Amino acid sequence: MNSKKSITIPPIPAVLLAIISVQGGAAIAKGLFPVLGAESTALIRIGLSAVILMAVNRTNLRNLTAQQWKAVIPYGLCLGVMNLVFYMAIKRIPIGLGVTLEFVGPLMLATFGSKRIQDYLWVLLAAAGIAFIAPWSNKGIDLLGVFLALAAGAFWAGYIALGGRISKIMKGGDAVTVGMLFATLIVAPIGISSGGLMQMTPALFLLGTALALLSSAIPFTLEINALREMPARTFSILMSLEPAVAALSGLFLLHEYLTFYQWLAIACVVIASTGATLTTKKAIVQENG
Image (cartoon, rainbow, N blue to C red; front, top):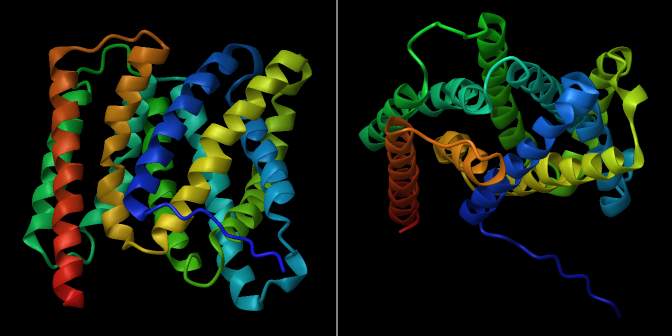
């Protein structure tokens, strides 16, 4: 009798691993933009992720209930638009600025419904870090890119809220797999019509596969499992590490050096995320004790 054991990663390490994976994938995506374009790169990322996840998880779509279909379809559509819009944004503005502006969505979500003053303090500290990163001069800033990054942040907040809901009624792997299928459906027309796929080569396909694994298949599976065990608000505060990891990814992978204020911003978001993690853990212990 064969027993199949799955590896379970605690929610906080899972979120941190997901962040690192996404930013590694972002560095690969940035290298693909000049050849394939943002739209086709988004399609490759999401489409290959869907194929990989279907092969690994072997999700049986016929077993889904009506309640699960109603939850997974908007989750998948939100996932697809979020990725497409964000790639279109960082095609126009630097990735560090894009991640910073995108985080406005989860940051606002983190403040909704909170009854503890600690949550607001950590959010304010993370907001201070964002203020240090964000350029306050409009010189050379693409306004459409800024708008797209903010829109991506709104869809990111939606993804967190929908992910928290669906994680309660579906297995994490199945939810992400089916969600990726619907994300592919909404991104495919734009990605194909952009014409970037005509430039595809075997080497670019391998890079696209690595992108799919690092930016979608691995992190979204980690996130959906983490959302099963932590509140969406806590998840949002932890995701304040995104701008910091994006800056570090740019430093080590793209050789983008940081200013003093950018390092100060990193310190702010790291302290905010650490504080949120510690106080949340303490609150959970008190509630259960």
